[in-house]
Image (cartoon, rainbow, N blue to C red; front, side):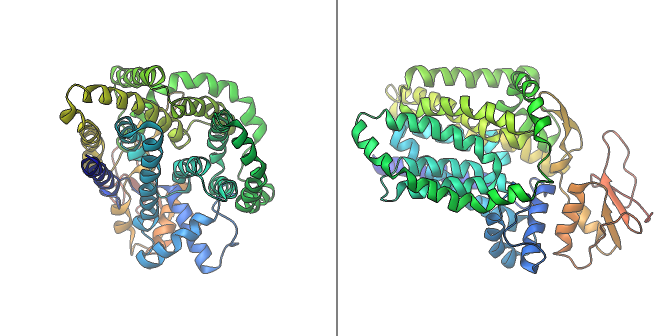
Length: 469
């Protein structure tokens, strides 16, 4: 029986690897933020940038150093940026597998694992090669460290927390949200005296934390020009909080995450049906799966969300990845309970349900995202984030554009994301000349929605001027 279970976990892992690696080099197209972090690697390699500074004051430099071997061996390409994140996703798989097996058991755990890793949010946003992709990994790694029996558990837990926070400042809501429920559960353990004795070593975690975050903390106080205005962000907190209710269904159903690739949202009926199914599964988890991890995740969601909304200055999909993953994970616990209940009646069929669920989610994403994206190369249409609309142009495929522009003389991106992409590829192609100034260069912009394409590179989603201004 143990061998059979092991084989089924292996099948889930293979499915997961297939989903996360399929067309990784072109789906989605290179993001401006990915390109910007890739340009930072170039500056580090050529000595043009301070070696302790990341792409932003709130983004650490360690991820850039981790990308260097991949850039060195694969050149300045999408794969060089994304393969490190694919390796991280493998780590996420095994960390999540260990945690759910320990705290939920085999049957419920596999359901939770599938809902987490095959959710639209994970499949569509965790394949991207930017620092914020690492947040779920540090959440699970910290949770694993805190429940471990390592000799220097507190030291390593603090170090993980510090490195996670220096990697991206938006790890902070997750850090607080994971520490508070786990600390409460930890102290409330039946062996209270043993726990209090262990807490005497808590000073080690402080040491580890500042070892991981100390340099970034200093940079946050020196490089303040890219941090926005905290007072304005605070003033709009109430507005963002009230908008959350209207936005949740677009995130949790996966509608906005899909639309970022295709430009097309789900219908209102589909969004509410999918969200309602998640809510029902969450209720099942909270009522019938009375495990510590269930209530830790509930506490995580309750604590994480207001802190996140307080920190960010607007709604953007990348900010809501962790919230969406936590909700799908909690729903997966409910789904796992249903699978376990079915297994008592028809064990042979029910034991295959997690694999069947993973296949269904994979086929669903392939049909509504992968196939349309490969056909169209993305979209420049507007879609809803709940409280505002935004364009899907950030994810469009730029490979045809780069091929078209090579050897055409100086080019300049009229928008920062486009300029970042052009600059990144100029490190790879010597015949792609990118100018930091508009004058004397062909200009590149996104084609506007519902307009006829006219320019140097037809067939792309970009508008390139025929001549330099």
